[in-house]
Image (cartoon, rainbow, N blue to C red; front, side, top):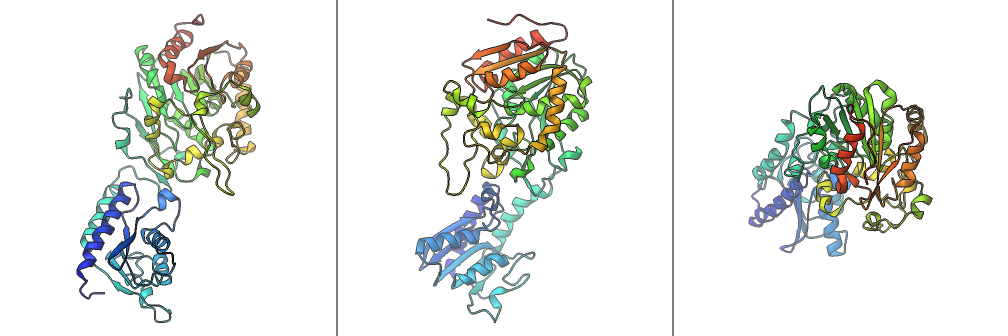
Length: 481
């Protein structure tokens, strides 16, 4: 492996390095590979295990698959594979099965290298095929790329769990109308090292603290049209991003997003921040979680603002009977793959804000919380078109929901129920169920044309009316025209 390398090897290794850089830009470990036959590149690929949820999606494996498809043969006779990092045992085995003529790699891998660093499968005499191996081609370039990728991660004062992803901060820069920094906490017991980000503005001894909770597919950015009015009134605003959403860490597995776990995280955050005189401001899929918080510490809560939310969405039959929903019409069902259930579809945010709500999710690997949305609200899987694939178990939610029903049936504080229409999930049918639960049965405030994401369309009006109805110094206000 120390023999001089042909001049073309450096050229093709530079092509592999380009694929590695593209992988790094996508958040993958920067390894790239190309397959060459008769002086022509027939396949190239970068690492993609994170994005594809595939532990075998190493650059070499992806390049081998692409080359076999391009050449119409799983035997790659006469081909040379160039890869920026010494192959692991899995990739080395695949290369031998493919009958490659040569393998050329850049940097050695002292941890998992199977071309001489840890073991040498290519030199195993008992195998019936032997592939020539050349190492060290542009090794310094390959090593520098890996070092540059891992250095900030190893030096990170807020380490990232290996089973989670963290959206790059640059994706949140210059979001319109959202100038407030997010705080971070990772030492709550339920977080187990995950980092939760939250907005916290206003005086700590404010007469009212607005705890603003939303759920998939939106995050704390939803409240930006209402926050200025709350702060101008001298109130405090706390708006966390649920784990998996917004600027918080994102577990890779959908099963991480259990209702009881998210609820416990929020309970611990309320306790850590010692929130007092709390006005719960709830929207959408964040409502079922938020409505179950007060029974754990009733003295902390002073008011309720429910916006297009309830303990459960409208059942599918009620949704089907609702007026045509422009929001859901904008989200046609994806074609179902053979043997796989269709994913749930949540209402699509307004076009003008869609880019901001997509910012936390640069690729499919970051979207586990969106795919698991039905685990955060009872009945959501059944209410969504094609739903049910990720429906929560009743046992996980039942105790908290029962306690919430009992709490709100005895609620004596002020409440405002705002309902943007059309909304087939948390529209009038769902919110009337919440209305009937409250002893005073406050009137439903209709926001015609505001849709499911009414804080986007009518945020300032909602905030002004909420301040009039729910502020300690005020009292119930007349319903606006």
